[in-house]
Image (tube, rainbow, N blue to C red):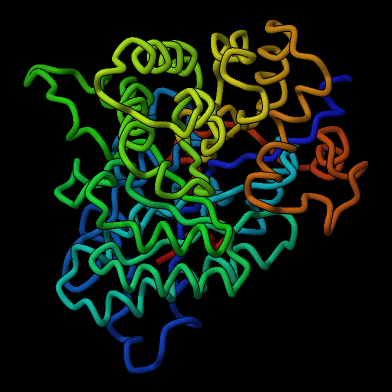
Length: 421
């Protein structure tokens, strides 16, 4: 196999939702109260919902077109962004130039756990907007290019019965996964161990859907020093994923729901060999605790439930057999600061070769495992020979991947009428 023969399915990217996304999906009675983009006096675009500024800044979320010197948590405007962040047609071109067949896109304005709608006061309006969000994501963003996106929904955390109903509704629309808070108790919600979320988990199992737990929402599980630099917020989330795995594995969740599928989104894989070794050793040594994994080791149960996801992870790839090659999947993370776009094939290929990964294992890691886990056919709309890195890049020879300062993007985009609010 050569690099251009790879087939890449990224199960962690992000959409920067465009203004007007609610226009066609919210009942008329709510339309004048829909979330709206407002450009403030400083020239910053902000989502406003129920009189509250709700969105996280664009900076960390949409820096893909900027030089590294401008990356950060700094806010911005749509006109300063690479259009592929929020325009699905340009996103496909950016996927093609990066050799990516398909992408799963996590929300930005709504938050990974629908935080925008969960924290708002009027819950009837919040539910209508949450459902409109899901309809936009499935019917507009994903449906615009069949076969190029794996749909991902959100659910109302404030009412578990409503969450169950939305899982059912999403499944009826062909959605195969939901995004959820990785450690609910870190933000004051009942934990997975409490049983509070069991009806929703049961619905996911019934519908054959995946619970995607994205990093970033579990900082409350660790107490950082008050002097901790910003680096902690970027380096530590994958380590916090181990705490999430511990809750699911040694708590009742995996035992109650033996068919539950969980993707540890952007959680990395290098930590897993040590964690599984430690879990098995603990299980064998501490028999007095009385843990029962149904005649299996904890590591075996982990592999039955989890899809472990990484962007770059040399150490993890070298230890892939200790983890389990069948539970590994790759991510691009466009348009965040961690993304390897537009050189994802080159970066991934280098790590795969360094770890001496065999061709059949490469296919598992780059597309087969994800396709099986999400019950998604990667070639339903595009033949396999047209889905390779080389074939997709051949469609995008005119795509300019130059990084430009955001001020230059603003001038270019506004001259073309792009990103105006």
